Length: 196
Image 1 (cartoon, rainbow, N blue to C red):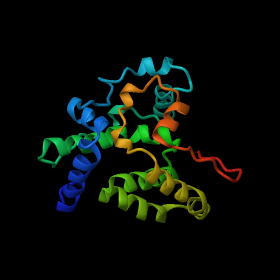
Image 2: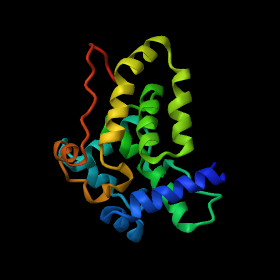
Image 3: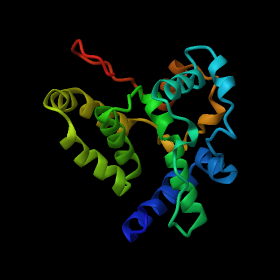
């Protein structure tokens, strides 16, 4: 999946420009935290207050019947540091869904892909953002064009670089504080429509 020269160039860009040049990114690259059932105490997260990042993440995993181990290990990237960038991208994907309050259905996935595409410029994210909407049903497509897409573009450009967030050190953080700090305004639908 990441064998192409263009993709490796984008990884280099994320690595040098977006991560290594920032204190938070450098800390993540130095410590190389992993998000899996060996490193995240899911029982602890379940017991946190409802308005915290950790409890919200735990609820997301339970509702969607996934675990932090659901993401495959990176293959086909010889550069160890670039392989970690992609591994981190995969492991925080469900956390990005969580903080954006996006379900895992097609509309939610396309919305998340737009934000990831804007922030990372990775070809796979751009492809998902551009071609994913072709699979939306007509009603979903209208909602996507009127509300989800404008919100995703605004969020992708104004929010902090999500791959630079050390989520594991924020489990106890109230979501309202998190949103203020990373400049995310959750999507509020203008019509009487559910996100789920």
